Length: 302
Ligand code: G4P
Image 1 (tube, rainbow, N blue to C red):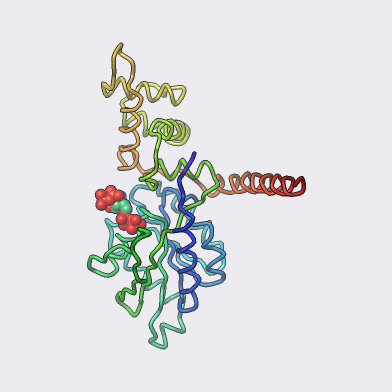
Image 2: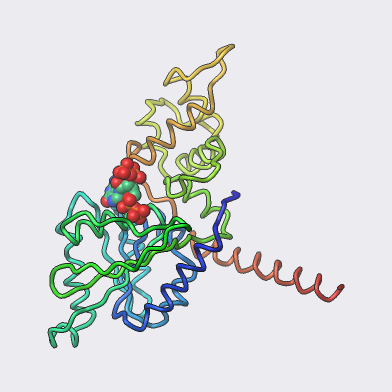
């Protein structure tokens, strides 16, 4: 899937992070619990080095609880990484973040010194919602408009933690095709020229494979349709989305399916698992190696 990325923004964000890191005790990376792999920023692991890191799985009210647990176990295998699954519905759980920071940095906590935490996340992952809950007030979003120069925000939250939020946009995985589809399916990519139908067919295929019972229940289907096309057609018929000649209006159905999926109306869904991610990383490494080889071959023919 073609996604319009903005290298200028990406560069600005990584520069800001590099410049800030020496003041930082812990990095808080906000990930969407439905797509913890695809909502990662691929540069961050390198930028952060061995700084302690808390990976927040946000919007966990929309994600499959069993898979959220799988992700937490998987992500915590990495040295210096802890996780916290949260939702805006339970602010108390979000406030546990401060305790986790203290546990990860016992020396700072015992010495009564402030803990500086850098909070990062790709757009729409729920970072602002989280900051507002932690701060107990509305904090203006850091700008991502190229024309506006905004300062890094320092937000004091309870228990001696200072959150630093940097302007600039961190983008998600750019060269993994499935990640692009998953980001679009969850609504993380909003302002791209999205082909609703293409995304809805991707979502329909995923739902048939991973959550067949929820789909049947939501759209009151007696039988599970045999293909994504058949599912779109079945939803169209049950919702009366027909156009001239009694044909199903696939565009309307696509919008309905995506809106209902994003709002959690089909149930709590997670679009990727650690096992899927491992497989895709292998494929990605092959694609990257092929690209690099092609580039080399081109150079040597010049
Ligand atoms: P960002 O700063 O990372 O860009 O994300 P932001 O907090 O603005 O949240 C993006 C969208 O996700 C918002 O919805 C927000 O309401 C929703 N959201 C944030 N946290 C949670 C959560 O824990 N659960 C659920 N279900 N949704 C959450 P929106 O429709 O894009 O914006 P709005 O119409 O609410 O303004």
